[in-house]
Image 1: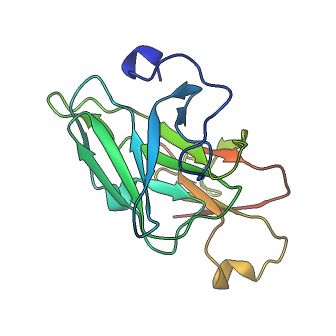
Image 2: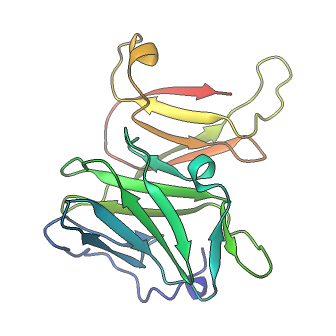
Length: 193
């Protein structure tokens, strides 16, 4: 994302504390958002402001929050900003990534802001490791598009049927995926179509 696209300011490497919740508001190294803690302890993240009115296509299907929440967050585009309201309790000292994929676009011309993601932490550190790759069909070696790629932090292979993926994303048109803002650790990777 070009810094000129976002009205976010200079690179932010130190983070900041908001209402005791943690470091908020980084997208590709630029400070672009903030968080508000409501009376009911729900957290709403406000992303950007952008330089144009934006819209989100099918946020329930296209926007992925990792780590996965048991209650789907509410994602809305309102004018030149996007808000994400968490309907679940957030884990302490955890980096969260809101992956918009290609769902976010300007309102007038429908130009997608591809691979846009917003990350924040409920602790003092923002995890920065990433895992990327390509998902191919084993028989044809063609790229698999729109597949869900996820990880588990445990080596237990029975988790797959009983526990949701720890973090997840989707593949693009070339079968490529990127899991952002991971803590150091060992993971099992799965791809589902």
